[in-house]
Image (tube, rainbow, N blue to C red; front, side, top):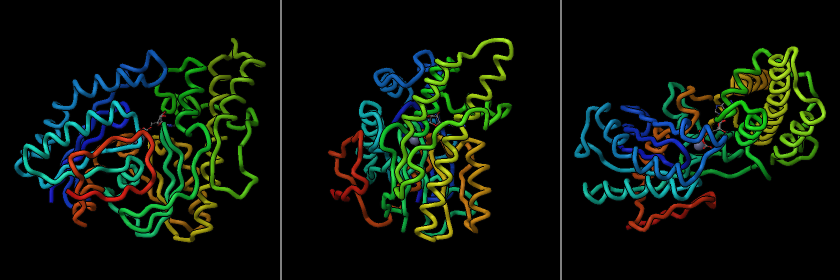
Amino acid sequence: MLILGIETSCDETAAAVVEAGKTVHSNVVSSQDEVHARYGGVVPELASRVHIRMIPAVIDQALQKAHVTLADIHGVAVTQGPGLVGSLLVGLGAAKSLAMAFELPLVGVNHLEAHVAANFLEQDPPPFPFSALVVSGGHTNLFYVSDHLTYRTLGQTRDDAAGEAFDKVAKFLGLGYPGGVVIDRMAKTGDPVSVAFPRAMMDDDSLDFSFSGLKTAVITHLKKHPLEDPGLEQKQADLVAAFQEAVVDVLVSKALRAEARNRTGHLVLAGGVAANSRLRAQLARAASSAGITLHVPRLAYCTDNAVGVASLGYHQLRLGRRASWDLDAYSRLPHRLPPRHR
Ligand code: KG4
Ligand code: ZN
């Protein structure tokens, strides 16, 4: 069963062809980073316009790279939310048009579940149940996942997402967008204990997160201790390394805490911030010493893509789920959508 996945929830236009939820035949991602870089963040109106311009070519390429035509496709899966509504609507419009024209079943997919599903395209997919940490530009969530389509939220951020904190700190320092990649690279030469930034909500029992205080602490520190020559580059590297360490410490502790409660023995990392080298290393170390198997997707499957969408779509279609033509976009999604049949 070949599924065409379509993803336009934020600033990446993506399409993929995946077989039986696990074999990737193509994975095409067109990034809008250059469009948004000068603004230091995603401009929703521009994102929608670029999606409209790019989506036909992105879908064409995904089919070509998979050496198939739409006549070979068995179903269309599309990200329904959460995300930017204007962006999501472009993907939904494209998916509905193709499904209608080629008489294919259509399913809507949750963006966060699609991030997690990227792990099922790897060699050693996680067995159910498992704990999952999804860290992206818009979300920081801990889940208990009992099967492909059953997610229970254990914790989430009360304010900024982890990726958002990276992007905002980078913007304040004038380091460019997206900030996570730049900070990850710069932090490699920095001293992570140069500044003791706060680790929020570590003492309470909850599995929720808060990153806006950390962002404010970095900005306040910079106002008190402006970064100047001599040694400006090293000072910047030290500062971002200390900031990154605070984010990573919290993510690692809470993920391990969630696993200690659930004892599934398997922890899955997903989302754009899962590309962070320090997070990958520290989580691997902590998981290994706690006897937990860590599953991390390759870098290309961390940031937004459509392989997870197509994989998840397969599992919905397998169970006979179908979306109706009024399938709508949501900026925030109640975590489990009731399946709608047509
Ligand atoms: O999942 P994603 O592509 O889009 C959303 O669903 O939000 O995540 C994008 C986020 C951005 O905030 C970006 O700065 C962050 O992921 N990111 C990173 C790294 N690569 C991307 N954050 C930290 N380290 C990285 N290497
Ligand atoms: Zn994402």
